Image (cartoon, rainbow over all chains, first blue to last red; front, side, top):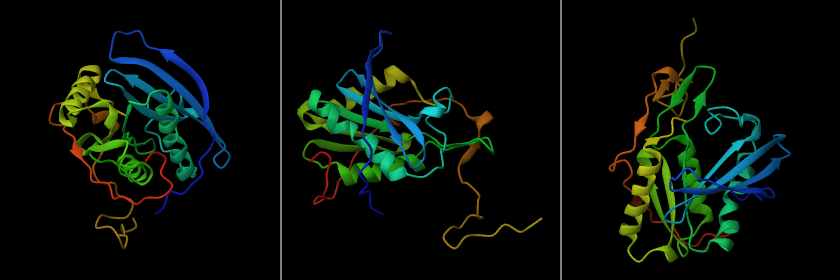
Length: 184
Length: 53
């Protein structure tokens, strides 16, 4: 399996400040269109304390759904869609050169059978991990995975002296901010 | 009722999803220190078309 897809052009929508007093400081929104699926997609980069962006995306048609991150769109074009989402990293690095990037593979929901996937090393996590390891080297980032929660962190080498201490600070921030793993 | 066939690659019956839970039975998963323990990944080098080196 290769992921040599060109992807699509990401368009900046807006930067929105978060004032809820949490470690989540602001969110940057981008959008793109897939001519193959005919859908628009929203990519968000949520900036947190410790200089970590959480990257998320969903199909715009599902924006009002509680399961927008978990739905299986099933229209194909996976390679171009995921590569477009990955493009957000070099764009953000230009403005935030010390930033680290993380994601969690959402548990898939099957609306027909009303079932949800387990949260350990789920199918989205396994796919995203493969792409990240294909497209991001180890010069800029240290790669750290959290298979129990299907999470992955690209830890920017400019942001720490002691990797373990930085990891501990980031994971403590995540636990304090979110407390529970998102259901979907 | 048709018998459920096994695919050539899977030990489970075709179409059966392992470790999937009915949505109504899903409970919130508390993030513990153990769950957020990271594992450093050794990434093979010499990749081409890298987005970030």
